[in-house]
Picture 1 (tube, rainbow, N blue to C red):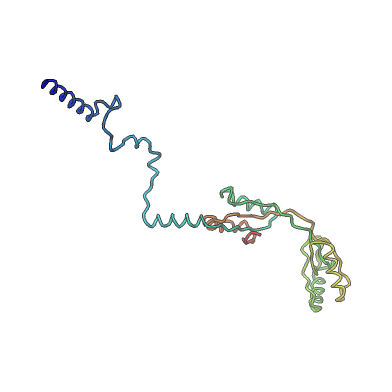
Picture 2 (cartoon, rainbow, N blue to C red; picture 1 turned 60 degrees about the vertical axis):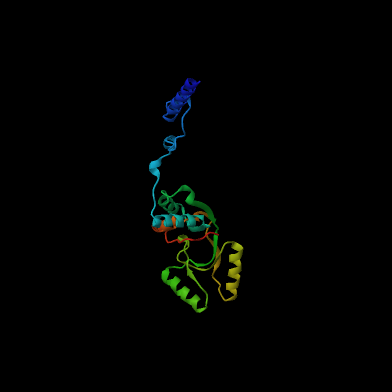
Amino acid sequence: MMRLLVLVLLLANGAYFAWSHDYLRAYGLGPAVPNEPQRLAQQVKPEAIVLLSPQELAAVEARIKADALPKECLQAGPWDEAQAALVRKALAAWPADSWRLDVVQEPARWIVYMGQFANRNVQARKQAELARMRIDATPVSAEALQPGLTLGHAESEGAAQAQLANLEKKGIRKAKVVMERDAVDRYQLRLPAVTEAVRSALPELKSAMAGRTFKPCN
């Protein structure tokens, strides 16, 4: 009996020794591994982990909070096709979803017109005469109507005719209503969600904007 007990103890000690020294790991037997080395193989790009200083962390948190705030929408323009091409070129490196150029139709322009005058001197004398009558008059912008004066403008012929009728009551006799410009397509830049990064890049567009400035979207 004593021999059997000793034999059992020897076998038990041998089994424990084999189990505790990982000799039975191939059979799925062995103690738990506290350092879990298999997790190292499961890491994804561990070299991308960057330790931040308290100042860097504060800057990142501030940027995240700023990006979470409602974004302002800005617009500028309008421009003709040639100028819009320059704006489009200046925006080529910007993210595609940060801007767009919308086509907007600029309505026809009707004016109360006086002219054509024989020369610029005659135009200047007539402009001075109208000023003494307290009537605003400016040189017409359409080249085909120069030299001439604009005494008022409107988006429809009917509205311009109403302005002419009022001027005739003031003694104006040689003015008429003409179309200065037909309806034309223009291009307007829209920045739908202006982040701090976009705002800091706005000065880069100044040279392409032909004097236009940004304002809140309609």
